[in-house]
Length: 70
Image 1 (cartoon, rainbow, N blue to C red):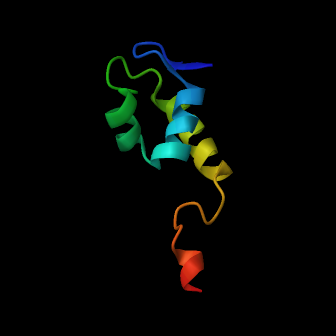
Image 2: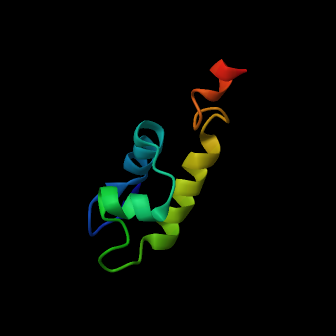
């Protein structure tokens, strides 16, 4: 689904950035995709998709070296 029409951003693009680039904040989302920088109508939806994508991440995905130290 399209989240930001001004910058042609879909929920799939947001989820992909979370998985591959480690994007975890609206600030990073704005820097990468321009979300919520023009008309701003997409901000709430983009935040919702971002939070869902972060919740779907495995617990150890953010700290790959932590398990090796144990």
